Length: 140
Image (cartoon, rainbow, N blue to C red; front, side):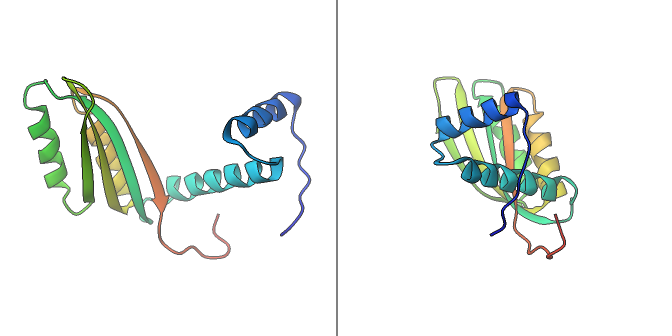
């Protein structure tokens, strides 16, 4: 393990301390390591559309909207090569939550997720992409 000295302004340090307390980190090193890992994962996926990944797409939609369930199922079937599994939850009378596990190239997964979330009557959605391919030692 290497020791690194970093200078942070007071506002950023206060934000870091707040996050540490909220998440239960024992020290700043642990918090900064986790945040650095998250930032590196994001950087690896943003600039590498061909890199393999696994992803979780979480979205809610209006179940009562005309043909909405059929449309979303059709989108999944059109991308059967990416869709590994899904979980469907009835939130209330009109709202459903779905979690879709996707696997494939980052660019394809991101495109699928953006296309699905852009569907009319999808209320909100977010995708978490995790790279799965082995990286080289000099890769970010």
